[in-house]
Amino acid sequence: MSTEQLQITSATPDSALLDLPWRLPLTDWPNDVLAALPRGISRHVVRFVRLDGRVLAIKEISEAVAFREYGLLRQLRKLEIPGVTPLGVVTGRRDDAGEPLEAALVTEHLAFSLPYRAVFSQALRPDTATRLIDALAVLLVRLHLVGFYWGDVSLSNTLFRRDAHQFAAYLVDAETGDLHRELSRGQREYDVDLARTNIIGELMDLAAGELLDEDVDELGIGDALVSRYTELWQALTGVESFASDERWRVAARIERLNHLGFDVGELSITTDIDGTTVRIQPQVVDAGHHSRRLFRLTGLDVQDNQARRLLNDLDSYQAATDRQEDDPQLVAHDWLQNVFHPTVRAVPRDLRRKLEPAQLFHEILDHRWFISERAGRDVPMLETTESYVENVLRHRPDEKAILGLAPGEVDPELEDDVPEDRRDDPAGNPEDDHFHLST
Image (cartoon, helix red, strand yellow):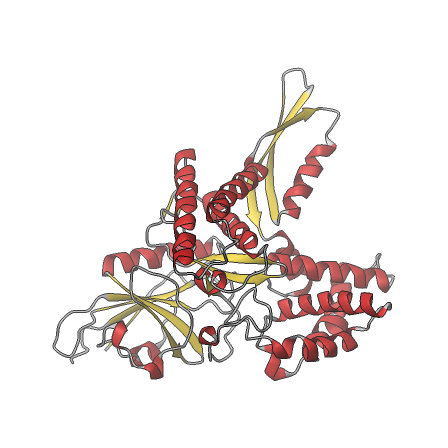
């Protein structure tokens, strides 16, 4: 096959992409380049491949749609929306007979994530479905806040990662999406209604295949998505009125939004003509309140609920060392050196890859509370870590393969053999310039 027409368009060019077998349809790619990861349902052919120590997701799609989705994913990344990282578009593909093949969209695989089917088709704790739907509702609200109309909201187009006791949802497929300055109420409601319909259908499909627990209420889960979205949207954007002598409610509103994980960049505060009633409405709302605070103090870049848990432990350390009046950044530095890093390093290196470091620390804190209550004493962190490693971590699958499952509940076919992935960097924006690799 002549490869003169093959072209790779990317903001972060990697010549190693040229070594992949682009002359073959994705369905025919050999096993020696593929990574054994669970795949969600897609209207297109999708394959995971290993390349230079990382895992990429490749989707065959028409050239126009590939470039459009690539551009949308880049824009969402710049807006710090949780989603997969777009790497490039491959065009000009031809097989050995010279026949044209579809273009390919290349994204970076999201480490420690799973499609919904791999989560729902296992024996789940009763609240796991609720936590997954909560995560999807938060993602949908964040997308709507920046003016993104998804157009095909579904569990199939979402990946889930553990975030302390909760989950975080990531957008995978932006093919039907569109970015506006602001969404109308009708656009938002259509997205939410479509999400409900798709979720119910996806769960019924699992039930028909006997892959869903009989106790799961498909309609109830779909309705829960609508309720959670409506509640969160109102909390973030709703107008609140109160008497002028109740101005403490302004601080209370901000604190409530912070608790939900959102920062308020600006508040619109107005009074009526006689000054007896005050109305407030958030104008700019950004997600990641706790993760940003932790990053400023420690440089750790983690999920928001993980950050909340680590900040709680940092506050406990500050109180235990009687340093409430010290510079918070100095205290945070000492907490990193004396608590966080030693705890993570106490875990054997071959077992650390099972969980992200922040999630590992969170679970060790949980284990410490459990064994301290059982022992009737405050168990030191080193002793806690040793107990956690021997009694919990050794018996768990890699978190890159399975989410939300207790030990022993793992389908071996879902486990992967991927080398340790790099941490995803949601703050890193690709350069605006594009580069082209051709052969």
